[in-house]
Structure formats: C-alpha cells, structure tokens
Image (cartoon, rainbow, N blue to C red; front, side, top):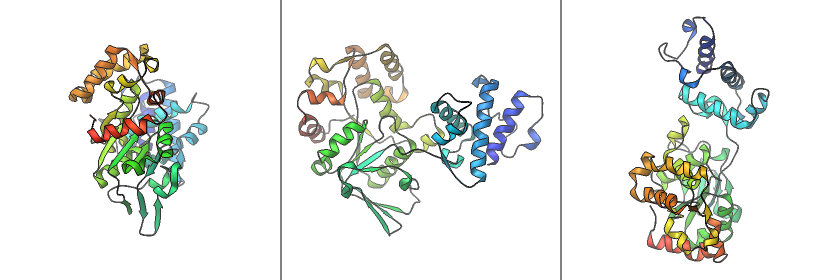
Length: 331
C-alpha cells in the first residue's frame, strides 16, 4: 500500500514544485518512479493517480477487483479497458510488484483438458479428465499454484500441448486427443493471461514432460509462442516465463500439404511484425525458428490451423499430429 502512496506523491512532485521526498516510504529519492521518457502529461498523471487511488482503496478494504471492474470505476478517464490495463501494467513495472499484490485478479481466460488431476490439501480433488470434452477454466482455483503451494498434481501424460486457439482446443477435445496421445491440452485463447502462463510454468517444472506449442503459421502465432517462452513486458510475466517449450507448428514445410487456396497473403502489418521478429534476440538465437520467419516473409503468405480441414475434417488428428509426435518434428 505504501508503494502506491509513493507513486501518487512522485506523480504530484512531477507537476509541482512541492518537495515530496520527506513523505516517501520505500522509493529511493534518486529513483524517479515515473521517467521523463514517458512523455508526462497532465492526463497521463491523472490516469496514474486515479488508478493508484482505486487500488489503494481496494487494498485498504481488504478486497480485490478485476481489471474490468477497475475500468468501470474510471470510465470518465478511459475510452476502453485496454487503456486502464496499460496503466496497471506500467504501475506494476514501476513498482516491481505483480498485479495480484495490487489487489487485482484477471477474468478467467485459459482452458485446460486431458489427463491430469489436481489435489487440494489432500481433500478436494479436481479431475480434469473426468470433466470430459469441455475441460476446465483456468481461474481462481489455480491462483495459488506454485512450488510452495499445497496443490498436488497427478498425471500420466507424455506431453503438454499448448494450443493457440480456443476453437482448435475444443476441436481436439471433442476428438479425445488426450486418449490417443496421452497428453494435457491447454489454450490461452490467443495471447495468454498470467494465470495460464503460471499454470504452464508450474506443470513444466513439476511433470518434466515434453511441452509443445501448436499455432497458426503467421506472425501473431509466433508472437504468442514467444509470449509463453519469455513472457511479456509485464513484471509478473517475467516470473512465469517458460523457455522449455518447443514450437511444433505450423511450420513452413507443413503448408506444402495444403491447397493453395488456403494461403492468405501477408498484410503490411504482418510484414512489419515479421521484420521485428527477424531481429528478435530469441528468434535469432534459434536458427530453425529464424528460418521459419525468413521463409514466411519470402513466401508472402500465412496459413491457419483450420486450413487442414480443406484436406479432410480430421486430417489434423489422424495425420498431422501423429506424424509430428512420431517424428519429434518440432523446433
């Protein structure tokens, strides 16, 4: 709570001639919380102070709120929820504390299915496999998972397969892929939230089994993969980075089996993202992944996972995945 108070004081100090140093609790006087590089404006300062004030009140009351609730508390200041989320992310980075410490919790986003059971304090059992083709939401019940938690994990799976899209996750669940290949399926429904990444990081550490990523053959698909591997610019995200995830596909070579009609031309924005990926340190350090980005740029097209249905409705489960797993064809 004192960190938030310091943040507000520093913000006021940026706008006035008031000497706020005597009132600071935890922040070094030589360390400005808000850098001049952030192009400080009255509106920006107002956003930081209002969000900090809302979070301060929440912590004082001993409760928590979602990002959506935070946005509705300050709709007069923000045009959309994403703007509020950006300010929260900046505060988290500036104070070097996770969002949870700020009294925030995310709306559930990720899903998990397949061969895994969670046991809570030797009493409550959550058998994901028995939940059938719907799987389970990665919500508050997984919040405290970690090396020091009382949650035990039981699984006979050989693989963890991370799916980019919810639609493909559901497609694979309906075809009971976890029985065919003894696996755990997880999706972050696009760019994953902290809860999903935290769970994956813990499962990789605990189960020590091969973890694979399956996404579209396009720039966002590769960026989502990198989000799992290294996290994002969020302070808390860096803690749950998981470098031991292999890129299973879609690869450039996999698109040779697809009809030309499934090839989607790269947009100008796609090419810009690809250019950034080609200079990304992690991508450059992996010759094969770097090669995938180069070939995508050179070929000028992208493909979605759904494109395999142009061959047959079950090509993905009857041919693509079996061959990938049998040949260990991943990067």
